[in-house]
Length: 95
Image 1 (cartoon, rainbow, N blue to C red):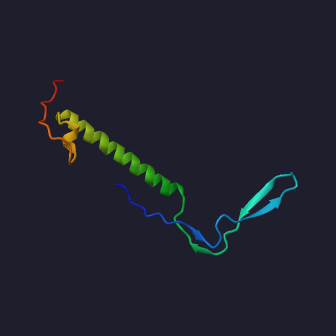
Image 2: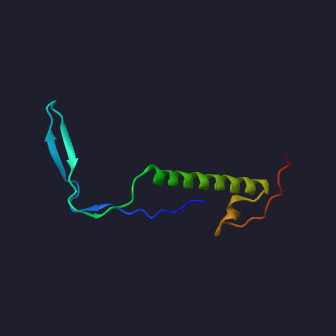
Image 3: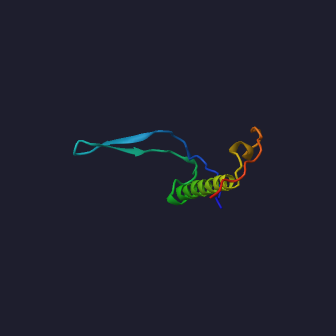
């Protein structure tokens, strides 16, 4: 079962502030300067992203199974949700 995660933004004293250093090879290095971290926020980690991927997969499989059952029983798709036009169920097609 999917575990809902309430994502929290990272909040810092300075937004998009960087220290610029000129390197000897002509390149430039930018180092983030946040100042005080006011809120740490939710980690953008493999564990958190894989939780989302698992939820997407789980819901895709549930939708595929629900679609299969509806087709197997010959129920028209519009009868599967509220507000749709109600039509009589058709007998299942012979296999």
